[in-house]
Length: 360
Image (cartoon, rainbow, N blue to C red; front, side, top):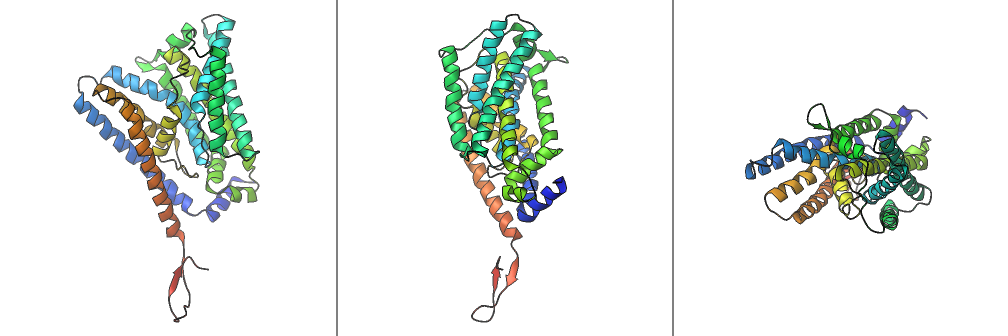
């Protein structure tokens, strides 16, 4: 099976996909403009505090963890699935990594490296479990990941007796969570940028990315040319879990805590950011660039609301409303793209004349 065969098969069966992909890229640029407008509004309202180096640093650091999760979520949503478990998997991975590092002892890079392996392995395990249940057992992704959300968080609470762990190695906290690279550039932001760039290459420059688009556009067409859809889905959910585990270690370093009770809104924010950035919740369309821009929206809103003395709970109201609006607009665009590809074929009516759109 060649890349050309997959591309031709999917494009032949799902002609609107190319048009929708162009629309998604345009939406990413539109969201960039919206982000700039939002930043401008809060800057005007709080010129002395909002657009300061300290505040910008905080926004970037908070978005960095979401961006790592967003890369994996983009792949999942492009396949037409969903992953509600990323927040709980992040917490579980951070808990297990913290306990292993504490048992190992030491405060240096060796201990941090062990924590990294454990966190990534924990996340990968949950991701593969999700993928197997979705691909092989044919359980809907919404149900599987909702179950994983509950189970992963429950296991994390069992391991900690419901209490946050706060004994992360000082190297992880000082060098990764609050460290800088090249002046005042946060280390955690640089690490996140590397993950994002790797995600861009993987999605847009490799067979793995092409197969991901193919499954989201038309999984059956992919099967006809030999694409192993089930195996690829397991890999995609495994990737999302792996990145959630990695984010768990970054979260541990940044917050100096496992934040067991602080990740309830994480799935909503990540999914909203991915959707706002132009990735279709119906699958087949999306980009990492749009995701990163979209993820800044909830973070900037939360930060701005706090500075203008608006209850931060309104952030969730706004993000939820925007998510519904984005899905609605996406539906309209898909319907327009499909109508635009239907041929107009003349037919003879009972009266002897007329046309029918899309008839054969």
